[in-house]
Length: 432
Image 1 (cartoon, rainbow, N blue to C red):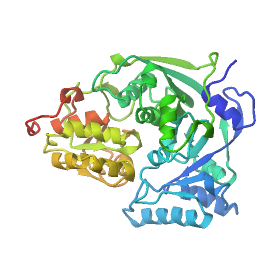
Image 2 (cartoon, helix red, strand yellow; image 1 turned 120 degrees about the vertical axis):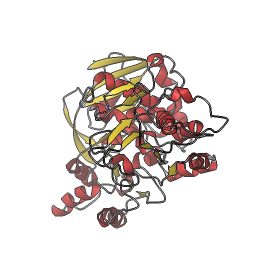
Image 3 (cartoon, rainbow, N blue to C red; image 1 turned 180 degrees about the horizontal axis):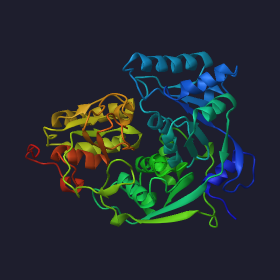
Image 4 (tube, rainbow, N blue to C red; image 1 turned 60 degrees about the vertical axis):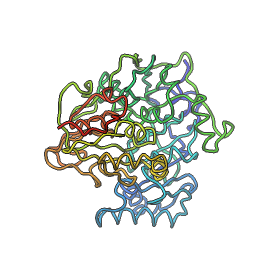
């Protein structure tokens, strides 16, 4: 029996010629990603056991991102703990505040992580990096501590779900809509502890930003990780970051690889999708219901990239955010913030009445920079809409693509972005 991409990577990193789902392995980790929220707990475990060392300072990437710049003393202490550890241990790759942004998006652009490698972090959206044809997953603090100390972690080989997406997406439909449609079909635990492997001509035609959006939300379906095979798009993306194919190993699933389940998606049939509260699988077509919103949020590791911001700017140009809506735009990294400024996107956001914030996770997980209050209604391009995720537990969160968020901000209620296919030349005000 052949193996999938994920199985091949895990076999190569555990000294096995062949592995099968359910098999326990000790897996070597090529990279460990650390941020200021989950890493301090792992470090305390090591310190309490007299195991305060780092397996390889050149193989750790540290990026404070969840609660930076610090909004209170507790957050400041967590940031201090991460930074002092980085300095003490000589961690080579540290992207400090003002030099980084959201960890997953920072990391995908560094050229450090490559196809065929393994990556772990104490953050569930580490699966984001699977778009590069690598095995990347979030782990708990205990496993994170082990990875920092020994460069190894135990895994049970996961089963794989094959998601085949074919056909041409409609105008106004984005990769975010594709992944929300998949999660709607299979459920929030439909890929429980599985690898979600994305294939099909739609994926082949998709840029890397779109692929990162797909793999980023594997965890929202209960998945262990998401993954996309390496192709010319991947290779060019890496070349643009100074990495040639000779520097990494490409793996492809065998024709006779075994899949737990196969999901078929006709991209042409997918419409702009909104996940209603309080679970990402509660998807409906955008604009089905006229739901008034008080907040519109564009950002997060799922949808804060330059392509997302360009789409938002396309809709906002010549228009105004509705008077009853507070709109916040958060570029995912400093580099993206700068590029958006150079392209004139920031001016469009400000002219439309949106606030532009600094790169961080911020309001995505209800830490700062846009926390929701009682009974607020937010449409967000982020990844989770659980009760209390972005603030007060009575607030309601609707997940959507950046285009749908922008269209809804202008209308003042959840709207279909296909109604905004071109800027309003008259620059008319939003509807009441």
